[in-house]
Length: 328
Image (tube, rainbow, N blue to C red):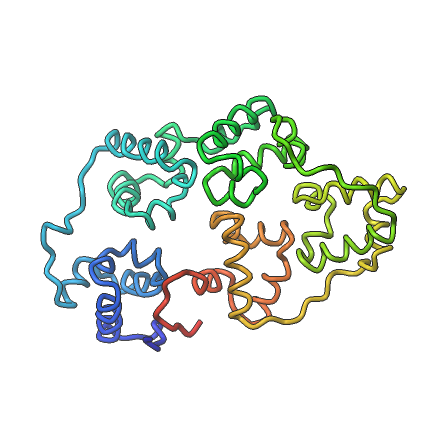
């Protein structure tokens, strides 16, 4: 592990750091986009600040620039055709430039930005992949048709898990179901799939115990009736209403009048929590502080800031491959 404050480093130190990175990762580290996407953006930024091109920097490190690593030279139309084929193959995962770079297509993102002077969103729109248009909310009958095709492909055993849907590129369906104001279980019922039997009518004491277990398991997320309804606890919310409670009053009766008091976690524990959240919701959302704060994870952002660590630095620390220790 290299311990160095890159902000005040000399060029000789940068050469040394980069050679260590190449020694660890091999030819992948020849590409500055790969470095930026895999935990080494600081060294790339420092090189740019020294007004030296990436190729010249690598030459000074002793690397010969040969044709094997020469940048490809597609036209914009050719790039759009290649990108459309990636969308057809991988689905909405390929909407993200981060995913593109991490899955062997860094050259494509680089040509879009450097050669054709386009942002990633501009390039996607030119390719006909406008996220806003694609995410137009579909009615339930169209969602059911799409969903049955997925079940036919993967097997009905997967139908109960929203997490499986998200992890396998079908987040848009779970989002559209939620925006149609219907729970995942009720959506499955509408497809004709047999689901778990309706729960018995809990009395108030049993309902309170069930809610306390939900809060213990899910934390602040379970404070919101919308989250409860969309994550398998619609029955609990509905039962509380049948017993004559508004949600805020029911929470108070359960002893959750004040915000949840969480014990202070170590940085490593916070990273583990964050990786778990990221696996469910994806990188595009969870890396935004505003999204984290608006979706029940404010406590993580606050604890990170209490360690005097900026959010973007915390995100950097959460990436899979970081062999370099920075002084933030």
